Length: 80
Image (cartoon, rainbow, N blue to C red; front, side, top):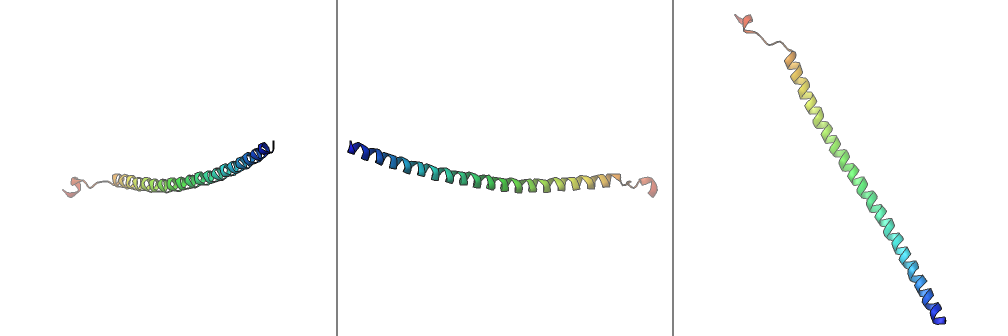
């Protein structure tokens, strides 16, 4: 019977160690996931800023073309 109690105590101790290890792994995984999310957010933010810059450049070029299109072109009739 005493041998059985010793085994039970050893098993409980091992189970507590396993639970502690699982909790450590869980905490580390949460940190890793949070870090990956933050890194991905930063990358997406940079990419978005880059795309916004490109869109602004395209809009400026389109506005420039509109301005050029609105100017009257000199006619050959004025030079005759």
